[in-house]
Each structure stands twice: as C-alpha cells, then as structure tokens.
Length: 559
Image (tube, rainbow, N blue to C red; front, side):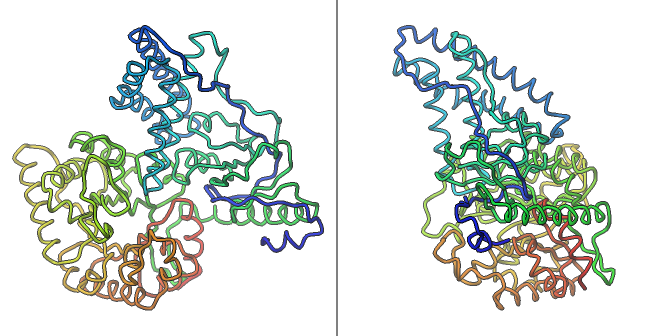
C-alpha cells in the first residue's frame, strides 16, 4: 500500500509520520510514550567538592555493578555477542576522559554531581552526533544511557528518587514511542507486549536498533519533531517496510495492512525454508552469501541471519571507538573473539579504512579539500608503517582461531599490493622468530573501489586470492559524484553503464587469473540488480544480515 492509497481513503483524518526503517515488519497497537524517572537538571552549589567527587565515584561504581548484573541477565535474551554492549558500557564508565570531565566540572564550578554528569553526557553526545558516520552517531545513545544510570543512582542515594527504570501506561499491544531508546531500556522490553517501536531520534546502527532486530520488533527511527506526546493512546500501524506510521487508521486501512501482514508472514515462512541451505542459482551455480559487520556485537545477529560468513568486517570501528591507537593486544582479542564466534565460517577483515567520512580525533589528520580522495585507507597505512604492522600482527596472530581472510582497501596500483605483501612477509618472519603461532595460508585480497584498480585488474589479479568490489566508492569515483553530498544524489547512479562495465571487467580479469570476485557495496543488496550481478559472474555477495534469506530465495530463481 502506498501513501496515495491512504490519502485516497474515505477517512481524510488519517495522519502519517515518516521515519527511517531500523527493522522491517508490520505492527498494530496503541501508541504509548515511555515514562522515565524524572531527574531534571537542577544545579546546586557545593562547598566540599572532594566529597561531591566521592559521591560521583560511589554512584559510578554502583552503576558498573548494575551493568554487570544486566549483562548476565541479557545473555539468554539477546545472546553473548549482543549482551557484550553492557560490558562496553562498564568500560565507558571507566573511561578516563569521561571520569575526569565530571570531576573537573564539579571542582571548577563547585556544582553538584548530578548536574556535572548531565552536562558531560550532553557534551559527549554532541561530539558523537556531529560525526559523519552512522555507527559513531549511534554511540550517542550509549553515553546518555550510562550517564542517566549514574544520575538516577546519585538521586536515589540522596533520597530524591525512589526507583529508577522505565514504564509506559498501556497494557498492550503497544507501539512504544520515545525520543530514543538506550540499550538497557530495550533489553527490558517484552516483545509479546511491545509490538512496535517508534522514535524521534536514533540511528539504524545503534545497539537499540540491533536489539530490536534480534527481538523481531518492527522499528522506525528518526521521525523527528512530529512524534509528539498528544499521540498518546492513539491507535497506529507501524509499516517497517516503508518507514511510515499511520495514526488512527480507518477500517479500510486496517484491513489492507492486515492482509499485507498476512502476506509478509507467509513470505517470511517461505524464506525460512531457505535457512541452512546452500545459496545457489537455478542452474546450480553456488554463490557465497556473506554478511557485513562493524563490531563484535554483530556476531549473534549475523549467525541468526544464516549468513555463510562475514564478507566485510570494518576494522576501522575499533579505532573510532577508542580514545587512542588500539594496541596489538586489544585488537588481537577482538579479532580472536570474532573468528571464534563465527565457528569456522569465513571472516574477511578489511584493514584500517580511516579517512574520508570516518575518522578519530587522535589521528590528527590534516584537513583536506577532498578527503574521500586524500590520505585514507591503505595510503594512510603505508605512510604510517608502525600503525599498519600493529594491525597486521594482531590479525595474523588471531588467524589460528578461525577462518580469516585479510582485505586491503583503496588500492590504485600494483606497487601498493606488492608493498602490502612484503610487509605481511615481514610480519610472518617476526611472528615465527618470536614463536607466536599464525596461519600461513590466510587468504589475501584487495578491494576494487577505484576505476584505476578496475582498469588494471588483469595486472592485480595474479597477486591476490580474491577481489571484493566496493560499489559505493567505485560509483562515486567513476561518476565524479561525492556520495556525502546530498545535492548529487541524482548523479550517483550505481546502474550507470560505466560502473557496470568496470564491474564486468573486474570479474572477467579475476576469473581469468583463477580467483573469486565478490561485491560488498550497497548494490549487492539490490534485488532489482541481482540478476545482472549473477549474469556478470559475481561469486560472492556481502550484505546486511537482514537481507540474507531474502537474497538466497531470490538467487534460487535466477541464472
């Protein structure tokens, strides 16, 4: 059903809200706004700042204890890889920048700890929201979550709050409405009662969105200021396929969406028939269907999606979440846990792709007129060998715990590939001399995301084990259209003949050299273009986990 269907309905009073789909599906229920404990933002003057800092420290440690218990309680509901967010929250509360910022504000302004925690939380939230990356913007909810917890504990200790937590009025089925949900709130939801979630803010990459997908709750985020509390108690339909919320739907609309939900349920049941089956075309040609990942927390979602492996693990998010360069040991532990978590399935980890729209303050990168075509990815790594070698050592040490492939981004020349392989050989020699175990047969591949790489793919193919085509960057570089510039949307056409020809050239040259070729850009999830990719001979596709069964069923009808 389209927006036009509703506007042409007999009931002209139907109103609609539009947001961004965080989890697909259709939900019916009564809108109920989340009721949080009222904590306010009262600023009071304190004379003994040392004692106030001690109050904050006591509340901080209490919060860490609560988060430890919450981790244990969420293991069964969300799985270990999702529950790990509560361990991350404990680490955030131990972060020296966060702790010192609160203490300094207390000491500088002689203010109460509750006020200091709130001000510091908003400062960190603003920093996250101003970042150019969806994943990092999603971290804003985490800092608000941990800070709200500390503030409520402070108020409970002072006798100003009897209990903390969340409630909502209606008994169900409920469409839960709020500004944003934080992970500790989402994990408390009863998905038998809460049929849908709608938020005015939020992010599709937040832990909350991931939890909602794990729990199977249709969710729409980023609705904006139109999500107002005067909607409390109104009947609504959440269309997690289009991103619309229909308020006070008439009988005709309810009937149409009821039929759509029945169809969706039948289709979902049909998709389940493909769970556990090999992905192959109608003619029997196998296709590797992998999932994209940004963190260790994605593993349970990926396994639940029935992906055959991870086709793109974005290692840069490890750096973007850190306040300083992550050490070899810190990276080794993450890579090891990812590989072990995937139970022997293929995990392709992309080496550091910092730059362009992804950065971290401690890198202190120089401002560039066009950072997308500047010092980023492999260019940054080859100008900072120590940084690159630290990551490669961690990767190869972790290789013994699973099925690892290493992939280098932003390649433009043969010389870059040769140099990367030389550095890897040096790493292997170092590890051997230090008697540190590693696998010697780790697959080595490169991303084809520049026209230069595609055009010389015949020269590059003999040097590597696989190609992975990054269609997002390949499209923007081929068509000279910055994908961060919203005004250039009409020029950013992934179906352009030039882009398709570069994909075709890459596949032909890869196959001629006996290597496999995959796709890891958004085009891989495009059902309309799937037939063309199969026709071009693509061997592997890496997509968002929620698309796995849909694409497996579609591929079975093609070729």
